[in-house]
Length: 140
Image (tube, rainbow, N blue to C red; front, side, top):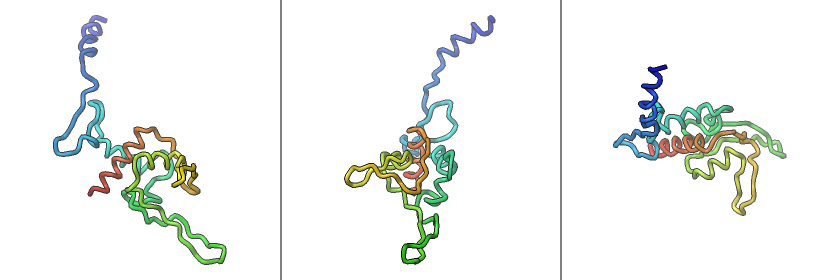
């Protein structure tokens, strides 16, 4: 019990909100809390590969560049068609968030549900991490 009472002030004085930044990288994608061992970009890449559902790369390819074959189908005239994933590296944060939550809006600001895009139940922080990863890929 005495040891606990001696260590409690040290614990309360410790700065658990300290941040770590690398001067060689942009702080937007690298600032993390002291208890985190992953950069936001790394966390975003992990979520992109395994977002608690179908991997983003299955449709949008490695790094969100698109072009992945999703399905082959036939139109009303029996012509073969191939449905491919879109390039999402140009999406804004708001567009990505809306797409992942199936709240996408068209040019007339009408809500449009993606016909094949699954709905993901990600937090805004997780969407931000995926967005940071896509921006990092786009810059390289």
